[in-house]
Amino acid sequence: MNPTIEEMQQHCSIRKFADRELETGTLKQLLLAGQAAATSSFIQATTVIQVTDLEIRSRMVDISGNQKYVRSAAEFLVFCADLQRIRHRVKALGLEAEFDWTEQFITATIDVALFAQNTVIAAESLGLGCCYIGGIRNQPEDVCQLLGLPDLVYPVFGLCIGYPAQSPGKKPRLPLPAIVHQNSYQALGDTDQSIDHYDQDVSKYYDERTAGKRKTGWSEQMMQQAERQTRSFMLNFLHKRGLLRR
Ligand SMILES: Cc1cc2nc3c(=O)[nH]c(=O)nc-3n(C[C@H](O)[C@H](O)[C@H](O)COP(=O)(O)O)c2cc1C
Figure (cartoon, rainbow, N blue to C red):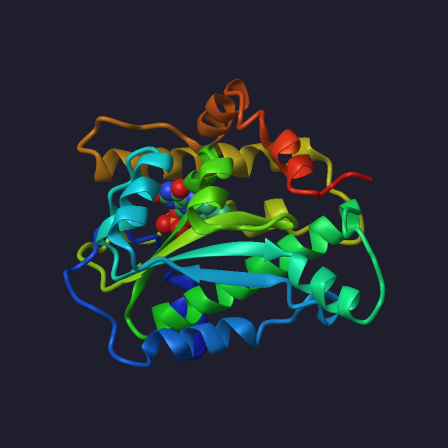
């Protein structure tokens, strides 16, 4: 195709980093690429906190379930959805507004994801590796306190960036015909066979990387996830931040 598409199709998360800083000015260029992403209604609702303080990094390692690469990556960024900045600006213009609609929450969160993914693509194009860290939402209140986040701002995920010290290879994705439907939603039974094959591919992927210790297919992984209570405190946390109230 072209180098951009080839690069994007080779994406894999990196969880082991070389002890090497990014070159001066690189992070700024990555963030400018991130910031160039589309933004819902021009709201630009992303705030990025660059965490250089190693004590805060260590706390983030604990919060995210002992993910050590949060400390060892050259850069660790926390991507926040931020409706406080807009509230502050419109208040200065004389308008008191709450910014607690569900739609505003969705658009702010989408903004963050697009910004971050542009940053990742830019980083990978330079030979850097990245890993998103949703694990920071294990204790979101603590993250808010550590980073001094005001109301209407919430941490969506962290992002490790650095030079890779591993090459885990591409993790197989669902077959395209199973996820791209023509004109209307395809009967799910029609895709069962191709997803059965996919489960085998995923199982092989883990088998090869764990010397046979793990062989879970994708469907089985989804079952394990569905059985877990996933961060059941989240709605309450977001309400307390002033978000998602109506
Ligand atoms: C929003 C988000 C949060 C994630 N959180 C974590 C995380 O906390 N720890 C981790 O090791 N990987 C995390 N990941 C990476 C996924 O596990 C990974 O993208 C997925 O397994 C596919 O693997 P690949 O990126 O190597 O293709 C996260 C990915 C996303 C998009």
